[in-house]
Length: 407
Length: 165
Image (tube, rainbow over all chains, first blue to last red; front, top):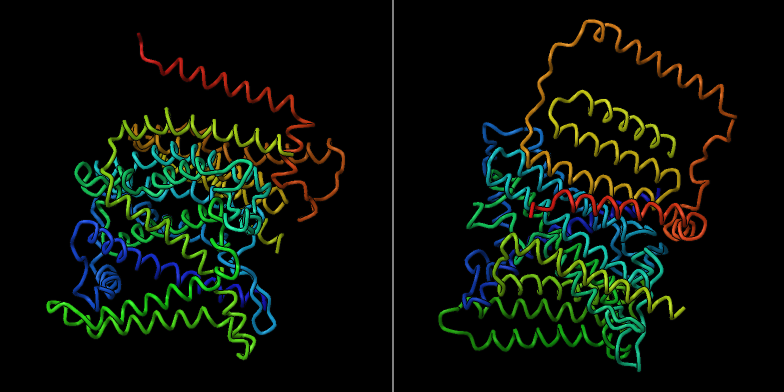
């Protein structure tokens, strides 16, 4: 019973954080893209457009959901449901922190401790093609159908190099459990270089990481591989005929998939929640980071531009929030506090490092979107089958050889 | 709990199997097949064959069925039209099927030796590690033969799909 209650609380928490994150990822994406293109991005709704995701959500939910007349209604409605459900399922096996002891309960910061987490994520992501493919087919629209077809072809093709790339860290780790993989990557070489699989000898996995990231971009249908929704060819691709909540479901699924695959890459190559610096420095980094951000915000709040008068009031508020976060991360040094607070403070540091790495990969996604143009479809296929796939195989064979020799 | 899940997913598998035959549209049939494979994966999981369950989902429900659905969509196959079936099949089809199944189950009961009933969670050799060890030691020859067979199939597909020169 206790287990069920704790699991329910954790599930609600993870779902809430993940969906909020997905919504704000859109805001971050628009802001970053805007700054890459020398614009300021969303600015009207709330301070610095911070309420934009909320207003988008209200708009999408309250809009009339138009179901076109000639669609296959059952599959038309099933597709977005499948997309968002599968996207949310795969995050449940991703651990995001170490063990925490709170009020006598010991619990791991994850939903399900599965000893084959990597396989579960692969299985679910293999299934998630159906959401897109079915949506495109059921819409009874040639652009949608072409988008769905492209998406299934692309996902089948890029799943091969992705699976091959993620086998090599598994060979080194000798386990399929994401928690054990993350725990295996703690420690440092020469006291400086972290023992993450991307650096770890005898076979550094940097090539595997690059292959994995390229394939991950294609798996999540992101630029430069967003052929299924190429605007200039296919209107909006597989979700052309979708509106209102169904469209929101596809949209959410895309961003949740991005988060999941970034978390997977973090665990497999970037050391999960292990900090990037040795211990005395590692615990100070988040505190200094947030305190520095707070100071910077206060400084900018004092000397604002004449055209942006609201910054005078908003920046100090953000600064207070940043200082609050710095305070939260310094909780574990304040030993006079009650035990639960200390436990939370201690457990938040691994979560910070995990979130920082996932955030860095998500930023890479947005950065690439602002930088690269879109592939042509034949280029996309030729790239994976004649370049990425052979390189992944060679890389896997080399890793296997090195691991076997090292035994 | 295990027994409830077993009967639930066994029922889903059978229902999807029946739906696969009954549906007239190829996409519906293909999706029912995915349902069968998914429920079979859950049954594998209940029996302790976790790697097999994951492989079932990744290979069958994921890769192979995506290819099926892809081809059906690409050819834009419509729902099949059914010609009028013979009255003989209509009247005797179901009873004959039930009789056939009963005969098979009776034969299995009578001929095969009594084996231990299945206990959920008793089997522990289903991890990826255990299966890998078995594949590369005890069953190495069948494994390699299968690999060669698949290689031949790939070569055959390439030869067939190659454009005329």
